[in-house]
Image (cartoon, rainbow, N blue to C red):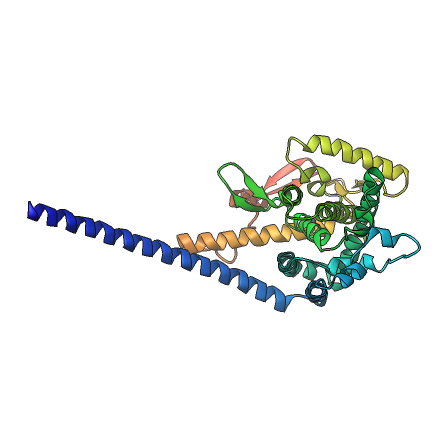
Amino acid sequence: MTNDWRHSKQQTNNVGTKSLIKLDIVTTINKIMKQTFVHDISHQLQTAVFSSGLTTKLICLFCIIGYGLSFSSQCVQILAVIPGRIMPPNFWIWTFVTHSFIELHIWHTIIDVIVVFLYSKMIEPLWGTKELLKFYFIVTIPNALFATFTYILFYGLTFNEEYLFERPIYGLAPFIGAYSVVIKQIMPDTIIATTPLFKLKQDHVPLLMVILSTILWLVHAVPIHFLIMLSFGIIISWTYLRFFQIHQNGTKGDMSSSFSLANFFPPPLSPIISVLANTIFEILVKMKLCKPFIKKYNVASSSSITINIPGAEAADTDRRRQKALKALNDRMKVKDLSSEAWPELDEVESPLLPPTHQLETASTIIDMNNSTKEDLNQPQTS
């Protein structure tokens, strides 16, 4: 009886020891994963800080200074937009420029700085410093005007003077929303995360930001002006990029189908949004606020027909470049995993096309004038 009791006690101790060992292993793995994640984020942020341009650094510097000034309520009143003081006899119009640098919460400031540094690392090399600075003011200043008019409208409906004097408009929310639109334009259809239910693409980010901001406003985590400014920032940035941004080739806007307003919404809502957007666009064309969408057909050559879409050349080139780089990186990963040999140097192969397609394309020549096809692989007969 005593031996059985000792044996059972020894088994219990062994089980407890194994459980403790497993718990220590799991804890150690979690710590390593957290340290690795934090190290990756900090490394990317450091790289973005040192490689960013002057515009990015100035925006983040002013955001940090603005947060320091926000501890003074008088500075907030002077630098943030107060709808009642925009109207006569005050005319505090400088606040349309300074309001975006004010943040009252440290976590808002941290998010602003991180997003601006990481996103500007991709955008500023493509656009340049002047274009990014121009884009910043195009998004923030009209956004402050729209938010001011919205607060005045709220006052007209409720006669609550808090909307005029007690609720300042501040923050970098419109610029954050605008960045999501720019990344959607540069890298459309990019998969951010994959779940068993759906795939999260870059196209869904602007709408998800609006939904998340609405939820945060309902639980009183963010003020109402945050939701207003974020939504207007997305709309203003898309309008500018779609119709007015001047590209290096001299064209304006980006009229490609992948950047239409309907693509910002899920497929069930896309047809409704498309009809609404087309109707508004036709009204703006009749008001001469936008130019009509014109496709140029080049039928001078009998062998091909060229279709030129205004403003799409530069944007599509950047997208193809991004897709080609992604395909090349994926192929290099496959090579490292499977240790497969690369093709010979005299083989011409594109990462975007399968080999069979290229062989077939290289082996035939189509003569449009004689409507005959000559196979280069066949021996010539005299």
